[in-house]
Length: 154
Image 1 (cartoon, rainbow, N blue to C red):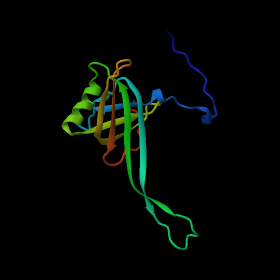
Image 2 (cartoon, rainbow, N blue to C red):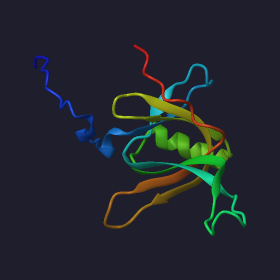
Image 3 (tube, rainbow, N blue to C red):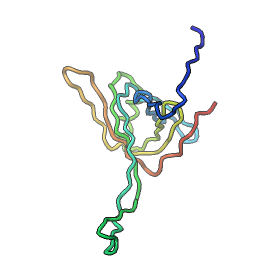
Image 4 (tube, rainbow, N blue to C red):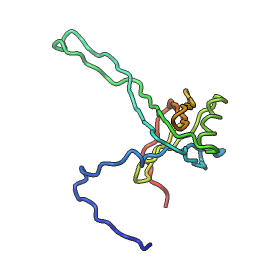
């Protein structure tokens, strides 16, 4: 099939993105400097959450209104994937949980830009209902900051 070009809207506020186009990868290589990014197969969801603790800065002269400052920040990813037999990403996630090892993750946006970070697999569950597909779900809690958004190398 030949290459086809499609027009795109000029109003960027109408360019919603589909959740199916956000992907999670795990570094299954030996180093952070030269990662081997392995897709976690069968993804259904990969929810990235970023939070900050609340520091109460209220005082008697604030007019009766509470004042809050952001404190320590954290991030986590809650994920669920169809459990695909032989999927290298799922096997690696399970192995990291069982070994108590941190994982190096890549969270990829639809335009292929991405962020990376290190985290601990704090939950890793296998669901096997009798009337549905088996799924693996888990939580990765961040260890330090996520990277700035990076562009894929050409």
